[in-house]
Length: 218
Image 1: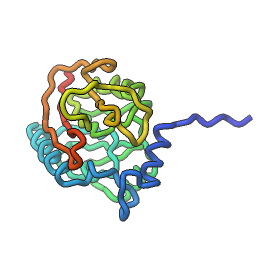
Image 2 (image 1 turned 90 degrees about the vertical axis):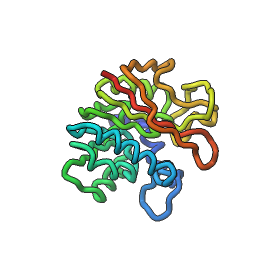
Image 3 (image 1 turned 180 degrees about the horizontal axis):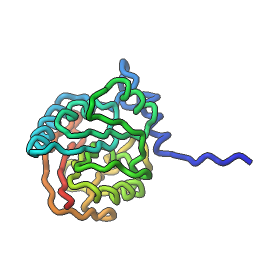
């Protein structure tokens, strides 16, 4: 009797995003969308993270959850002791391994919601949780306590909004429900030592803010 294959709906959904180029892109085999390529969004983010990472006498070991096409991560590797980039799309990780090769850089195909995460000082979670259901966000949040610093970027509505309205995991976000991720609010209630807003960027289409915060966990 054949063993029934375990469904991975989120993994399949994200693989389809790249396969059908639902986030755009024509030339590249994989394209992680405007949020990873628009200079008005990317350059201030890189500058802010560079300043933070360079403030340490000893470079940090970094885990990048949902590294995507690595257009952003490739600009941060040099500021780390080791940079461990993960994504749940196997073909994307294989593609990145072919394109990027540095001594302190590793790529792994992992699903942050279900797999154990690599050990690191700092974890980058950039516009990842906004695509996940609350159940999967909770699974990721439970693992964030293993890092000293969490650098979280989310696309959220401008002004006051009702946080953490549940969605089905996929390419969409909570913006369509006038909601966004706030890990400190229910049902996640992420416990931290300190919070610092790193930057907020208005999107070109006027649909909310891309906000980056640093949480010091312990």
